[in-house]
Image 1 (cartoon, rainbow, N blue to C red):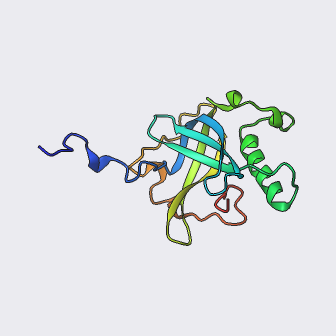
Image 2: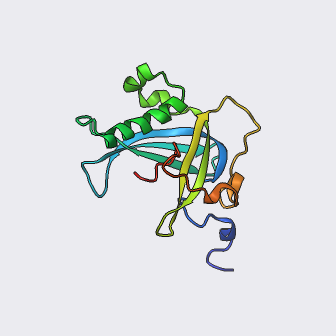
Length: 169
């Protein structure tokens, strides 16, 4: 009897931070801001999505714009946050006053893809986001088994014209 007997480690995800890849049903379980680690003056907004069956989660992080600047970088940062809120069908006129409690608990359908950085590291990116109106035909993902799209969209790279490619942040 080994020290790890009964833990079924062969079926465990390779990384504790592994997120399902593919299209899956989820719930927004947290929306919060935090300061950057390398630059504490930079602030970020995190949306946490938890897979419907509880098999995993995915964090989508956007850098908050500097409210005192309207340069291209800050306009892009505002647009990226607005894109998420538009996907949740939040009225643009009420976005600035939106409370976390109005977003947390929202059922969504997200599509994530695995990307490969120039240095060879892989990461999971949000590809699309929409409200979940209860269509049971959407698969749920299983972490460790590759989710709903193992080997399919896992090498998509997005790019400058991809509206959901936030790898430059």
